[in-house]
Image (cartoon, rainbow, N blue to C red; front, side):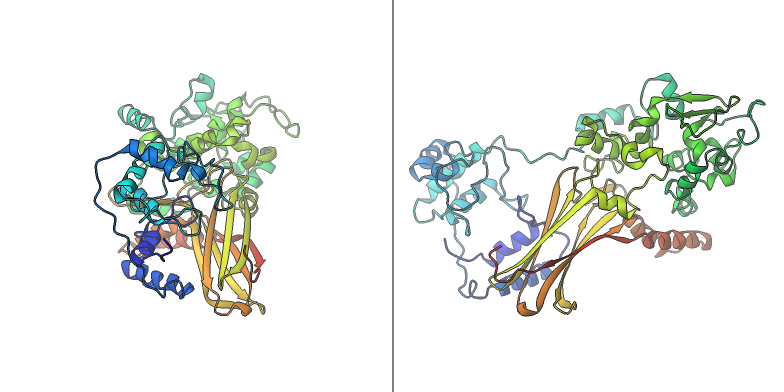
Length: 552
């Protein structure tokens, strides 16, 4: 209708975002006072636009639904010329470069608030039009009753549209089935009896080693395995697996007395001999975390992948069982996938295996081992490694000035991870956008950050507060704009991707340290927090020159 948005319109956009665009929702993140402050900032970008006070349009009360009348008006008012006869966005007329989106397959972008009336939101869009597009306003052109009727027809067109499903979500019936007959945590669920001896049950104590084994072979210590498997041991020493019992697990045990056989120990220290109070407990073995024996030794038999490396001499007295399981992703799922009943908002906190199954890599035969154990390396590089994360993503950006406003768009595409980027709720990627002048000096107030990750919290039960991760092959875009009061000084935009590999635990450790704790527990948490904070790194940083007086 040519009217600027009202303050309430702007508040709604800030609070609830704009579906179908990169504008996120800030409801619950910023306060009402901060929303009002943001409204003032937005209006300050184009003062002339808001010089005239917006007059809200008041729509008459809703009459009974009249879809048939709406279908007639769809043609009479020329809606089909742009939107197409069936609402698929395939009309012959074009008001803008971009065609209208398909009303039959894409859900509505309004209403913004989940509790708002969808029928009224559609009628209001028809009445006021969409400024900046070819969609005119029909208020004053047709009666209020006809506006409602058109909305009824649009709702009919959109009746079968559905939002793009989160492929990692587990179906409700699967969750219910697992609650009724729960899968055991940390257990391989397959049926092959030979493969089940690896992780088909909690790892049993090895017992007394047979006399046929040499002393080094009769040990579960990684230090003894290194005598023959020197390359693998050196790689393992640098891995997060070797630190699985050190990075916070000790602090959590002191704080909550994590018991033997719980899910934490099942994956962090899988051998029975690593469990305090268990048969043959060895504290030095426990300190090794996920080590050689935890994956490869059962009843004093070595188990591993087919095709032994030719660099290894055969050891006739040491039994070897070759299993294809070691080259498949379901070997990794034991510790990197929780069962359906643990779902938070439809997704377990560890959901990597399902993300891989639903993505493009499983169909192509690409296993976890292809990326995380190339050439059978035992480093298991992941989110703690800069090069691995850089290989997983592509960062693109553009920066330009229009109408006295500096606009920056940064896009992060998941080009190399076979699961979500990042996959669990533990790490986070921080996308930082900053403006700099020609001398390389940061421009005051021109900096913003966005988080890529899954945010969860525990308060008498888990809850998910947001999930902005990027599925395999998909992308996310962040846009930011600043009023260019000093356009001549603005030379470039810097896009920085900082990785916080243990972001969730940083918050947890900090929270626990704010309480009264025994000295030993406090020291353990302080050590874990220092290690977590020390793992931060910048994965990518690019500078983008700002195109002045550009139309994008």
